[in-house]
Image (spheres, rainbow, N blue to C red):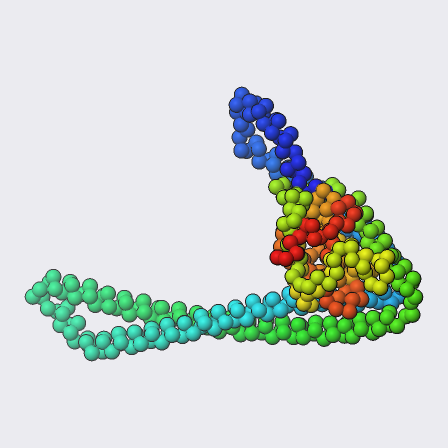
Length: 398
């Protein structure tokens, strides 16, 4: 896949510009009605190609087989379920927050309507009192008085205006009462929705606690297995080989996925990229991993608060979003020209395979999946399968 495919043809476009301009001047530009169908056809063709490539990618991912023990399979199932429940809980919490804001607005609206109703009641009462004090006698005398026809006409208009104002005030009063009834109904409905959301959230939290207890048991069983140092190294090497094989398959599958025109090439952002999450660097690229000097880190391990949002360092497409042995819940972004960024050990994944993400967009939350003991993000950058030092690409001090 080439994020800068459109930009890469800029020189060729420039060479053709003069010839194209002369043709346009000679025959005249095509009318908009002739251009639009071609643009629409090209857009539909690109969309179809994109859908086909995403379908092919998902089919490829569906065929991936991971070599893992029964306990590791249970760990995958448990951590994947926890990730799903975390994501759903977050969405429900957002709904509750928005619902509470809506409820507060409705209550404020109801208070304003009630205040308006009381003011309208007072206005109508004043009008009634004034009409009562004036009585019908003055009106009849004025009508029967033939001495000054002009004065009679003016007084009739005055009484007509007063009556119309009274009728309008009563009409507004009636409308306000109906608005209060509507607001009260909306408040009751919103309260019911919030109650259902809170019950659903409580249910998700109970399910999540049960899965976390299950995960704790699985981890205890995994750590209880006696493994020699050589077996541990072999396990790490197998995990690394699985990740390398996955990246190779992705590189082969995503070369032709179209990308948005005008996207900044990843290579041009070297040294200017942000870290995906702020936190303490627990391991750097090339540092020793574990107790054996033969194992090295091929990325960064960033300690952060559990549940903190992980952000995309650059725009791209999600090409992997699943659990992988050794990496836990892993999300991989393709940035074009063979560049990938990897985000592992997540608590939950917020984007699906095939979706585009913008720079800085939240794509996951920090966790400890993959059997880790504490919350931390595994972050790596690859180019055509080869790991690159993130310190050369990201601003570590930002």
